[in-house]
Amino acid sequence: MLGLRTVVYPVDDLQKARAWYVKGFGVEPYFENERYIGFDVCGYELGLMAASGDLTPSLGGSETLWGVGDIQAEFERLVELGARALVEPWHTGEGIWVASLADPFGNRLGLVVNPHFRPPAVPSLHELA
Image 1 (cartoon, rainbow, N blue to C red):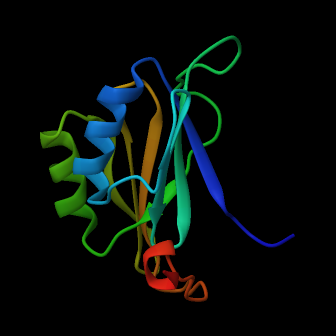
Image 2 (image 1 turned 180 degrees about the vertical axis):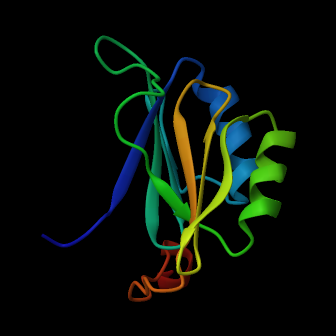
């Protein structure tokens, strides 16, 4: 195992999702075609894939937690951009905070502040270029 590389969110409207995630995550895609758009988010890939067959947006199942510095500010900013609050930021203990939202396309999107988890620095494609 090499660790987390990519999280893929299925969406019904790839171009609307692209625009929302550019605003939400503050980065432009590094790769895109008619079925898939890939973003480099601090060295990890967020993929948007055109929904089809069994691959459909869902609030059930797994939740990906994206690390943030100020969870309340990021939560509020994403809600202002059109995300729906599912679980307001809450303190789980020992300095760890989590929150959950639904992106405008029907996928579960989690946020986390965890001062105990220190992943190794992963260079983004922009840093490697």
